[in-house]
Length: 206
Image (cartoon, rainbow, N blue to C red; front, side, top):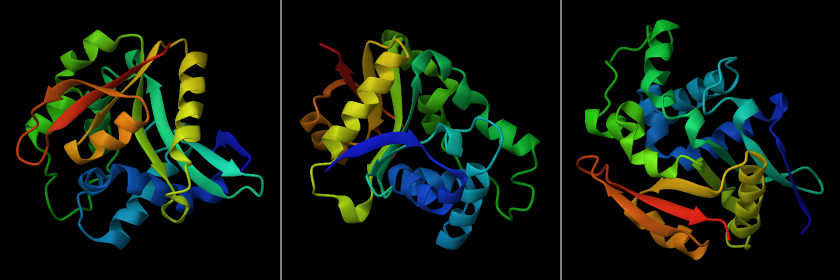
């Protein structure tokens, strides 16, 4: 199957948001402070259309598509030097912009989880030249067709274009074998609290 990598378009916002949600899993519900699928989908679409450079903004998502233009998968990634301060301010920025003002419940975020995601960014220091893979996923009905490997090759191409020398990501324990099959090795364990533990996985380039 011939594939290409491209930036997501405005007309693909609903499909791209569902793709992002499949990658972020529970994190999307934390971002939107809701457990209702329809509410989370609507709020994620709002964030995708947001002009600020949020991780889930359309212009930050790279999608892999086939010859007919169908989205097969996608990823969100950045040079890690660009995000060492990013997660510290993202939620405050959303609050300042009034995004959470209509919500009934307070934002529920584990301080230890937020520490991993940015307030304490010391775990990132050994990977100063790395490309941080924030989200990586294949569309559900295209899974099992060997598309994860070519998508990861696109990640490597983008990383090298950004002058990075490796790829780094955070993964829960049940996802570690998947990324190990793609060449990653466990580099570090981060204790984020109950059900919030992560492994740092690292893939240096040959």
